[in-house]
Length: 493
Ligand SMILES: *Cc1c(COP(=O)(O)O)cnc(C)c1O
Image (tube, rainbow, N blue to C red; front, top):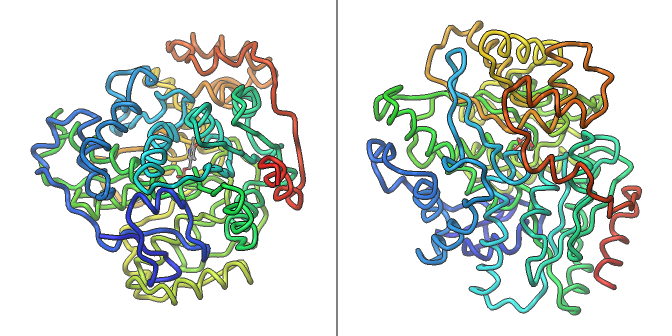
């Protein structure tokens, strides 16, 4: 098995080379030449803990890592940084199963992959005898930034630069990032939205002249965004784990199909579920939930991807995205792994902001269903779920939960469904509390956190306590046009 680019079939890299590179020089994403099958039966999944589930998934995709290397990475990632031994608890509420992916050190699901990516990457550096310092370039819609900073802070041989939309993240998200202390970190607020940050990062990545200059000076780029296969693969694990949990709890029989419902932005999390399906996990429907930026909802309805529309800032900022990078991997698979075809569509996207897929490609994607929920729907879901069960969900998870309700109403499909719960409500205390009672709209951030701990009957996570009094270290802001200079300056070039 090898990894090729979604835009150039002639590229053949090992898994560790793909992890190290992050993004292909042609701007394409790395994709495995074949999908490994689960090496244990669906019965046996019930007996696996999180680390074992992760191993079963990762050894399939990362096949040039030795067992010892992988187990070592897994042990160092999924440890006491998580505030629950289960790592990803599955909680039933009103008939749906919430897969809580926010128990890591930065309380968003990005920790599931970013607590292991630094280990996978430093292992790849050793395996490939690379002598270059790795510069992690990251665009964030709010949560990847902090999770990547936490993962790479102080890691020898790496430095990390994070660009975030300066007016497009929550206060807590921003504070989490700009208080990062370690000297190998740089955090920059960009005057623009997430798409601006991500597009410019991609442009810097694929700048051949810059790449040569960096190599001559002992540097190389890699990516902590879900464009990196080393981020996507660890995310496959929790779907496999959740299925095992459902079997173990007697909620399904081994072999039964489940649905998954995922609050989606860059299409990484839901694509990981699709990879789990390709490994043999019985998933019937992939419910792709969007907020008001519902470009994916329209795409799955019509086959036309069209980003020419207003970019809307919402209460689920990590999903405020109009260019979903990882969709490119599904597009590539849907046209029969035809890199030329995919490349033509991606070129339409960058030239005209849109493309249309063929009927065959649409047919390939028919297990994906687009849904969306605006803030009125999502906030009333938060309120209703809290009033009926006492369970409090975050604003992103609420978009998924409200979308799921719509899906059930439209289809009557009662298949057991796992909803990806992607962030702790503490990251978005104001929006969450305001959904429950409008009187909280005004309060001060940390006061609201103290209210939420009582409301939700959940302890305040460490990640929040940490930033209460932490000094702001990173104050740089810039325009999109200045991003490249900032990167160069950081390397002293
Ligand atoms: C990143 C993020 C999402 C979107 O995930 P994608 O993999 O980009 O689709 C949803 N919710 C939260 C809380 C996030 O941080």
